[in-house]
Length: 104
Image 1 (spheres, rainbow, N blue to C red):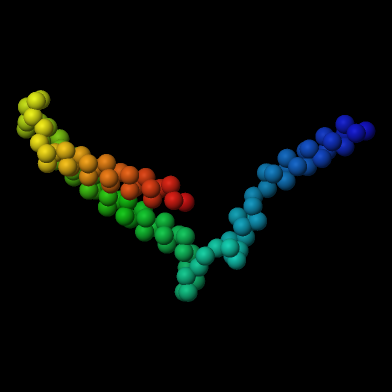
Image 2 (cartoon, rainbow, N blue to C red; image 1 turned 90 degrees about the vertical axis):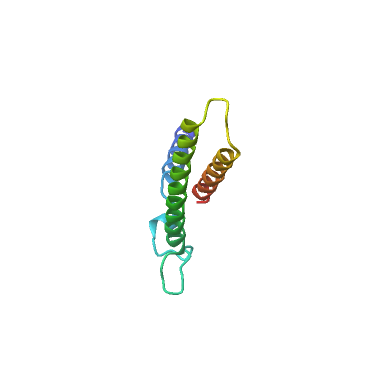
């Protein structure tokens, strides 16, 4: 009898754990931050972050092409300071993009 009661309680707990949170069930939950005009603030931030990340990716692509040209132009023993600065800028931009992606 005790074993059956415990198994029912455990099964019920598993079923409750699979239910989505209350906020996910109701899109008009009071916990969603909204702008004064009623738009979802989180969605606006995500959209702006995506656009900024796309601009940074374009910059990374351009810098990578420039580094490739510099590497092809120079010998294997020559590496210019400008190329190193471009590589540092690529690293900085990639960290910025990764930071935006980890935010939410």
